[in-house]
Length: 91
Image (tube, rainbow, N blue to C red):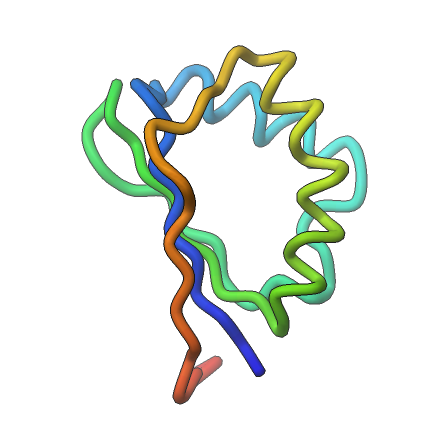
C-alpha cells in the first residue's frame, strides 16, 4: 500500500535543501519506488512530503538518505507523519 510521509526538518533553508538534493542526484535519485517528492514552505522553514509505493521501500531509502542529511546538518523537529494513501493520480 502506498504511503504519504510528511517530514518536518528544523530550520531547513533552500540552500541546504539544494545541497542535499544535488548530492542525492549524484546517486540514484529519484528512486523508482518514490511516486512524488515535494519541498514547500518558507526559506528557513521548508517541509518535505513524499508518496512512496510502500513504507518498507521508504525505510530502505532512508538508510542511504540519513548520512547525507547528517552531513548537511539537517535535523528533524518532530517524528515524520505517515498516512495511508487511498488514491494517486500520476496525471
